[in-house]
Image (cartoon, rainbow, N blue to C red):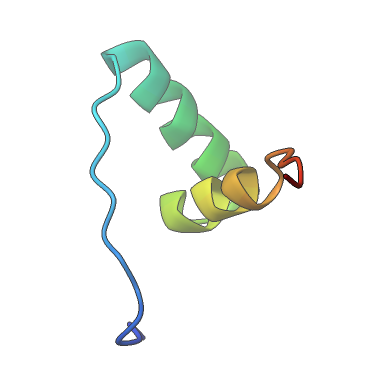
Length: 48
């Protein structure tokens, strides 16, 4: 369910990378959104 604060992100990727994401999602039974959110949350962010 989308929340009012949710944003939409559109990303262009090469076919091979999309195939990799599709395979990973199928193997883990997760959505692309779930996988990408996890990757974003794992980004190392330094405090200023």
